[in-house]
Image (tube, rainbow, N blue to C red; front, side):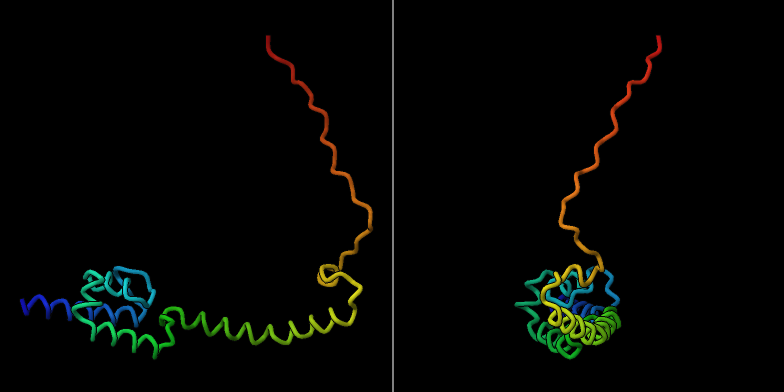
Length: 134
């Protein structure tokens, strides 16, 4: 019985390492208990009831990585950079929108103007019958 427990612990430890390295083999890269159980090849209750210390170690190591798998950390960094670059643009856009409140916001962004008269939908061409073979 101790062998089964040791085998479970080894599988869970290896699963933790694979998930945190961003190279899972049996689950998604989500850093939660369910993918960890799938990655280790054990039932979820084995993590939450039998090997609580390993689950807590996983949670601790996940929080050290900010909850973002390594495979996605470069994308997170790009998103943070894009948000930082967009902030002055948003502020400039808000400034321009508040400078001319009478102009609709959509026309300030698109450069299109509204003529005031709705246009009728285009009419379909009449249907022409094709000759049939005799």
